[in-house]
Length: 496
Image (tube, rainbow, N blue to C red; front, top):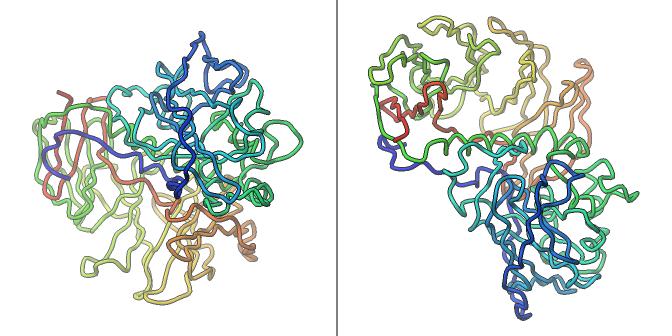
């Protein structure tokens, strides 16, 4: 991070889902290309399914780009040949409606002009538009005016013409779920032969309830899926893992764009090392991790000072519930990567103190970690240096002590994990290559008889959906101040 920030921007590639790539070839000419006239009605909201959409396109179904709710975004519609070839020349190009969160994001699907038995790719290419709801809570983000235009992930969905026509007056929704499922079958698989049969088992890995109430769970439920009201209708892995990471990434995006322009108002020398991470503890204190764990007095951001240090190479994880303790990773400074440990640090005073450390065997590394929602349990994946297997360790933890409950051998491919809300099921990610991750369920309701279930579902190829959101500058809203940690300084910025 440079000491001088000229502008603050972040690409929505932080959002953790990929899109369909470009089609190959095709000769069908574009017969659309111009935007339809939007008849804006009063009212309407993406979060209320009983409120009619605020636009009308005559006999055509209304679509909405509900990935952060994108206004002024270009959506293209492509026909797919019976052999699975996608025409790269779009049949139609549309731009989503502008306005506030109750009016933005809608577009003409041209459903009345589609062939019933043909397949079509609806695609947002990611080079236009502005998101209004990055953390997907149904409320317009407070700093939308600072958001960049056209710096978002592309998303898409493949549908049959008759599916959209059968929606009637319901809205056709492009979401991260539709993009995820459409990515399961590449264009070479988009042939009409058996296409719906291929989709069916994939859809049912993510959706458990009949969203559109037609008696079957299929792609028509996917294009009806409203993430603001239908998360309860998805399986636990999507609801508790993928969706939570989408929300985390959206919050990071929001924080990064809280200020449009900034000016430096103060700094203090501190050895951040490679971590470059400042954490706001409260209105008067900022913690800095790195080669030393340091507490900074920020009562006056124009004259900050170091209060106390802990001589450990620390990477912050998160606070305890009362914010008197920091949970973190630490590593041997003489080693570049291996032998990281989990630590609890008391920050109730101005001089950080080590509560306890969960150390490893000399040839082991702490590879991944998760907490239960109430932070009463800690789950670690440990790996052997240059070998296998890997181990799951489960601890009862408090701010002052940790007790090992179970150590259990798991797959040598295990790379990350997530915990169900009732703490009885672990979803473990197995990373087999750059193109495939597998999620496997582990029943830990009885620690004396841990049950590893069969293969779960595959995640999107080419990305790790379970990695934590990238580290970002921390904002103290009470002070209207952003803190950024470079390698040698903690710098405070305010809006110009």
